[in-house]
Image (cartoon, rainbow, N blue to C red):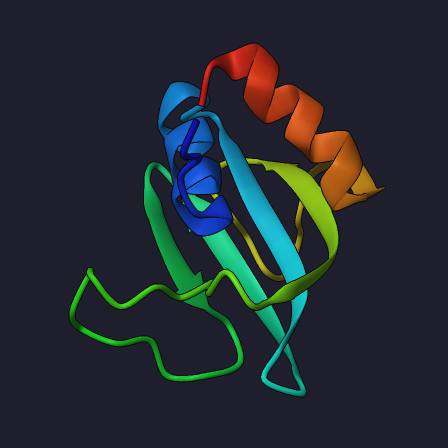
Length: 100
């Protein structure tokens, strides 16, 4: 069974939960990055995001440090956290439950 890349799975989760925003902290190519995922789209908060949607914002080689669930829409000055500090392992079970 071939599984989809984690970035795509997180985007699919966000499509099924449009009221949520995912904030992913990851180590990408030796540097820390924060990626926001909302309604099927990913964008880096710390690095330029490619215009080409086929270029993954969260590559498979990324080391995901934690995932936060926030109420959407995302407000950087007053975020509403639903859950903080989830590990990738914890979130993978949610992805499986969501069927993505």
